[in-house]
Image 1 (cartoon, rainbow, N blue to C red):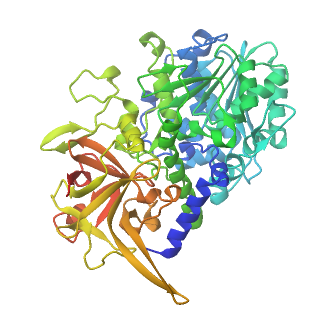
Image 2 (image 1 turned 180 degrees about the horizontal axis):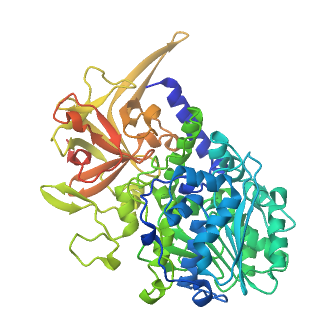
Length: 617
């Protein structure tokens, strides 16, 4: 264990738990920076039918719930990202994506190519500005005979930069990370500084206003939409337009952060009554909790909640503090990952969103979940008229694992062979007691880890289900920082205790340390707990575990906290709160009592990731 690595992790932890840290993550945005989503044939991505669907099926004067409108606007908000347009085109190569990021004219041409059939005689114009250091606002404007659609893109790469740190991170630094309060004569209330400054950069917002006025915006219906950062900017821009005398008919914000204070939120509700401002949340997408209440930001409009791709709760109540507490650690883990990339100077690398909270909730920030959920609310007749959604993320997609993906597909997984709702549920299974059991991973599991009801605190033996050997300490190392842990028959009784707002510590023992300072002797008893090593915490593949003295500050110790996810009876998955990986015996030496333990991404049927908790006296 390298001392400097742990010190840097502590620094990152301090950052993310301070006001500055929350500012840094004010609107984490997309997972969409990169994905490893499997390419599927173009014929499966979109139907040949659905031509002119915005004229024939989109309700231009809609208020309240309208599922067709929600799906079509989400479709535009997804394809406005180059990588998802690449999925639609069937070309997911890095070269194609880079070309669309760096050549706005090419992006406009490709977007028009794959969406123009959805409208009647549309006119497309892509607006973009970039200062290379992070103000990189982008929006596609589509005008038709009776409507104007303004589609904001969320955080992505800064196309005016060459490959490297600024290409990958500049918009995060200047736009997403700046959550100071600012005011403007164009708005009511205080708003996020970085988000508004991006819209103002080099007259971006005014250029769009001037253009849509030439396209008849004062007599047409205007719709404003976007995903993530784009959803936040959609809300700001809708108020800006309203103050200029062009009040949008509707604002649909997918995976939206909260861009303003209570005064701003109140004004948005006044400007867009009758549920004309709708915010869409998918399960525990952490971006939908930001910017937080503690910084003075508030929510406006109607919350539309998808508990999985098959369900919808329109006008859902806002999250309780307990619900928000289950999501925050995922944000902290992502900040740690950002810090790790910068610390290691990994220029050109991309945010590895699989390094997050136990439930990998950043997976749910992919717009593909929102798109599929909106699609499945449509009737069969409505589905026949609209373009198909793109395929969902899989367990290899960034920010995702098997359990998270299966939870996204259904909040109530069914065994194989039962009637599967709408044919969209796949069951993740693990062989337990020679019987196939469904791994159930639900929101209530995570909540139980917050309230402390998941397991009873006390003394246990943690046994590998695959070998029946116990998780224990290397006797030669003793209780010292950096001591390794392995499958053993030796010293293995542990104390499991609740710690912080979520999760548990796994304590192997204590040691009294005596020190002398200027002739004064003092003693301190330190507890030593299971710790996911900081140096390898966010690396691809496995991460090392070790013994380390307990960090008694809950906000700084996510790598020492563990979630217990029950499979059946006394059998559990044990997941690290900081990086989302499971405690895993080493498959290569699982029958060797000197076999070291690691953490690894969840895998189907991996018996070495199943652990038995046996009470110990």
